[in-house]
Image 1 (cartoon, each protein chain N blue to C red):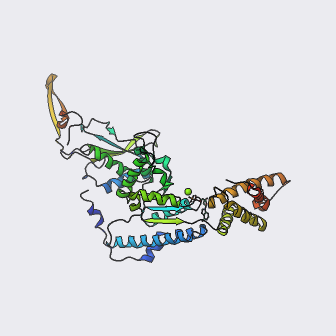
Image 2: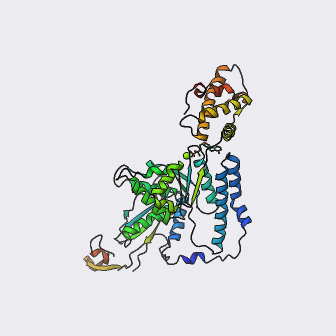
Image 3: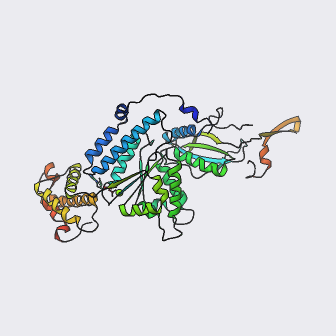
Length: 139
Length: 304
Ligand SMILES: Nc1ncnc2c1ncn2[C@@H]1O[C@H](COP(=O)(O)OP(=O)(O)O)[C@@H](O)[C@H]1O
Ligand SMILES: [Mg+2]
């Protein structure tokens, strides 16, 4: 099951060239660009691990694509996303976030229904992959 | 990535117009500016013009599908201090931008200290930071040979060199690296670092300036700061150059700039001490020979 989240989630995965162009758009707007990765695809997992610091002072998007490829060398089987932060309101706010790398196999989520008081049903989802401990979920 | 080819196939070009490309790119302006703003440097200017034509033709060939590899653009600028290497590098960055070989055209100037760290694990992030900043433009490494210290077995410079070489090869479309420094030291450096030697396509030598060129440079500098020489002060400057050139630590045009800065200081003192009442622009911008002749150089001393 293909995990979708963030901007462009309805589009096919971007090529590096397309990633470059999107990132350049962010840089030209004065946004700081960050790379993050995780092996926990749960939609409520908001804070992913940071790959280095957000990049503030690189005029060209090649810098971000370079770091992305460095990140892929280590976490090539993880989810990796790019996030752009805009600090112009006086705080850092996310303007754009999109997935740029995903595991080759995404087993999806298990939906459990629990019957609770008054025959109400509580739903919860669990990624099949998170049965395994962190770091050994994807190959 | 899988669908990369998709993007390029859209426009099919069967003809190019070199003259039009030349005009449209603004390369002519830069070459003219290079000619006008820099005194002397004839061999450098010639090399740059040749390189510009080559790159223009290469771009045209690329458009027609005759080349698919981007050319190696990394360069080395060798010459003594103050011969214009940094100044030309700035123009080169602009030129490569106009020709479409770098996307932004900025110049990032660094030395060993900006690339090499103090302890284990410090160097790689430092070097990468610099490389990322330079992407889209030109990275100028001054006195590049200090990266290589064979006498120190555990020198972190080697780590920086390895990352540099990797990026120079794999990210050729993203940045151009210019290594600069003294000619003899650069030659030695390339001898012991075949990796760099093979990745550098253009070697440009910057000759020392003649006395006459240095005098012309002095005039250009003075004029650009809205000052002027007269007959006597120009003569004094010519004599200054003759003496200063034989002294240690002479640094070509840079020594001239320093001499002029000091002459301006003395001029300001003189103008301030001698002026009673209102004075005009010409008085304020006149450099007299006394402003130059008061230099230590004329009494056996050494200027920086
Ligand atoms: N040919 C030239 N004409 C005019 N000014 C020059 C010329 N060459 C160098 N300069 C000036 O001399 C100074 C030193 O030049 P720079 O490019 O820093 O030399 P380098 O990098 O070789 O040490 C700068 O202020 C520069 O503007
Ligand atoms: Mg210099």
